Length: 56
Image 1 (cartoon, rainbow, N blue to C red):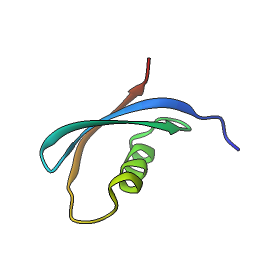
Image 2: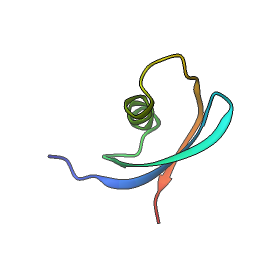
Image 3: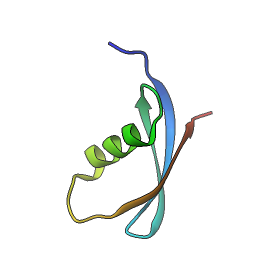
Image 4: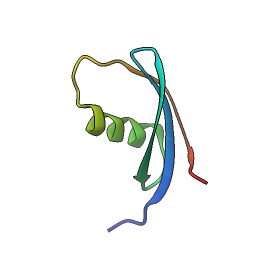
């Protein structure tokens, strides 16, 4: 299993600012989008303005 690091993902869900914590391998935007899709499902919600940084 790959080594993971805790990241904070800042994003907008339907225009509302939100954040989530996730264990990611490399902290890429694509990996963060996949984690957000897993959290929110792939319904009609619009996820935008994704930024990823290491959690303190």
